[in-house]
Structures are given as structure tokens and as C-alpha cells.
Image 1 (cartoon, helix red, strand yellow):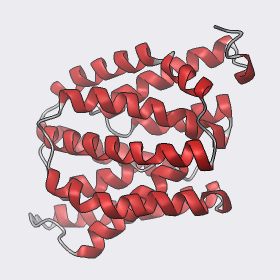
Image 2 (spheres, helix red, strand yellow):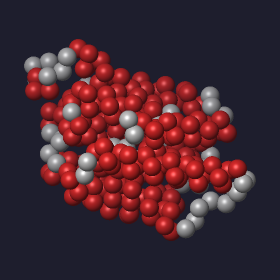
Image 3 (spheres, helix red, strand yellow):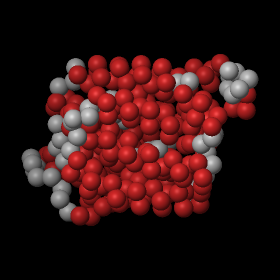
Length: 251
């Protein structure tokens, strides 16, 4: 097997980190939101910036399957249907303009937008405003930027976390809606990676399958952790991790 994947030039440390990355993705998809941002620098370290996006997508999709299988009945389809069309447009824009945008500048811009969204949400919390944002600009902006950012760097988790928290969803609905949304959206990205960017190949898909045990382990741990977090505590947990994730984008 090592000879088959020789073109990737993976050391023992790389294999260990790759397995850990798969486990973290599994945990993130099953409710331990935000921790997946740790995976991005790990994958870049092992494979490089652009190739890592193609290698990460199938791992995310495999983890999506675990999440959707468990939370399949806990989704708010109104929000999925509302966001999906504009998110797909965002994916197409990301495919076209992705190679011409500085990754550093893009991540800083995304971090600023996430932090602004968090500030608005915290102001609403402080004023005890129980209404949810209903303006078309909020959902359109969220969908477009989520699609664009997930295509560029698989980094739309914090954008969606702000939106879902603003909708005041219960814990399981939050996780289930996010899981279904990203499973569908991630599937729309495969043609771009295969035929346009050429970052997904037969060998890269087989390489991704080697970390399936890590994804399964992470998903199982995620289920256990989320079960033990109360509703209100989970909301604050996601908020804190999202803020930390936004700051990580500046580094």
C-alpha cells in the first residue's frame, strides 16, 4: 500500500496526522462544531494548500454520511431549501475565482465577516431579543458566502454556525440541519475538484478511504460528547469555538 501511495510521499508522522485529521472531522460533523478548523493547517502541512482541498472533500463527505445517518430526522428543511440555491451559486463562483484570490486575504475577510455576525448575535442576546433575523439579505449573504468559502478552503463551518445560532435552533436540530446542508453542498463540489481544479483523482480517493476508521472513531466520540452537553451549554460551546475559529483565520 505504501508503494501505491508513493507519489504522496507520506512519512510515518504524516500518516498519523492524517488519521488524526479524519477523527477530528468525524467529531466536528457529529456535533463538536468548530474543531475542524484545526484540520486545515494539518492538511496543508502534509499535502500543500491546493491539493489539500481536494483530499479533504471526500473525508468531509464520508463524515457527512455518519452525521446524517444519526441525525437524519433532526433537520429543519426550510432553512436548507432556503440557503441551498444561493450556496450552490457561491460554489460556482468559488470554482471560477478561487485560483485568483489570495488565500490569506480571503481568510482574513471571512474572519472579519464571522466576527461581525457574532457581534450582532451577542447584541441580540444581551437585549433578550428572541426574534430571529428574517431579512432576505441575511440568508442570501450567508448562503453565498458559505458556498464560496467551502469551495475555496472547506471553511464555511463558522459562517453556518452564526446563521444556525441566530435561528435559535435546539441542539439536535442545529446539528442535523448543518449535517444535511453540508452533505448536499459538498456533493456539488466534486465536479469542480475533479474536472476543473483536478485536485481529486482515483488515487486520492483511495487514500482518503484509508482514514475511514479514524472518521468513524471521531464520529462515535462526537455522538457521546454532544449527548452529555446540555442545550444551553451547547449553544455557548458552539459560540466560543466559532469565535476561536474566526481568530484562527487571521493566523
